Length: 425
Ligand code: ATP
Ligand code: MG
Image 1: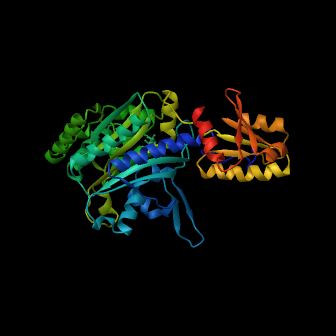
Image 2: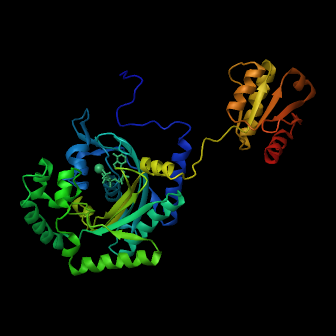
Image 3: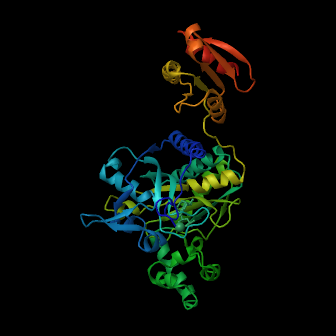
């Protein structure tokens, strides 16, 4: 493999043909979020490793196996962010955003880094759109975030996605559940994978999230958190469901969804696509009422979700959702001779100033080659300018679709005349 011409495994370039799709997804998500009162933040690509140990949790796959951690030249342990929530929470606390009116609602588009086995929909550098709502325990906030995610999927014309929800309770009711889980898995301890065996003591709920088929088989019959919810958590879950019902969003209860950390609480949800194979979860989220306190802040019940942008694009492609392509050139100025080239350079700049996508020959090609190139760029109009045209002050304009030719004066009316021609076509 040539290291100079091959990108690292699990990374992906976005080429000109695809970047408009990315921009469409990002802008659709960010502007929908804005309508819901979430405002964009941008946080660094790397943070202190400690933040993710705390903020993601030591028993998660992300922390145990997937982090890009290194020591910088000042001997600090640094980690490339594997997800967006921890950085957003750190940002909130560092800038005291939570001392303003609550809740604080933020959104972001970020690159994330996880050392995983690359496959379709699973990369080492990937991108997330996410939101966080800090400072409310009300079930209406859970439902609002879920509705936002739903809205974004609708606006991207993503069909065949179902919403799965669950509640994983609070530290009080979960303690009893952990006991029940330990008792259940104790009977299968020899069959569990090494990771799950180590999870058994520290965080047995994570076993439900294991990707090994053997562990999944065992976990299938394990007791479910929903049966162990305390009254408050049960009422909270009921209220979330009621809001979702009011919003008209169909959902199914999926008792297998977990976010097995002490500071993840109550509502958890996923949007799952039926158009993808294994990597079918396009959005995951939930409540983390204990996280901000865990990071040294005040008690601040909060929640959020993140969507994988690569997976959204895969689903959009699979379901045939309309996606924008690169904007074609509006006008190509074909120049013949040095004087004409100078003039085209100036005219192109004038047109661009009017928001018209203009190009001219920067190679020194023949007339024929310029026309061919203009056609390849999808130019709607070409304008031919040579010594003759400079002398008469009239350029020959050709509509590339219809083949009709006309003259355009090279005077003050030039930009308006070109704009008019574009409008006609
Ligand atoms: P999975 O179970 O697929 O590993 P996860 O639970 O690790 O997902 P989250 O941490 O909840 O994922 O991240 C939120 C979203 O980010 C996921 O639903 C998915 O769409 C996307 N995502 C997660 N990991 C990757 C990855 N390695 N490559 C591409 N997208 C990813
Ligand atoms: Mg994962």
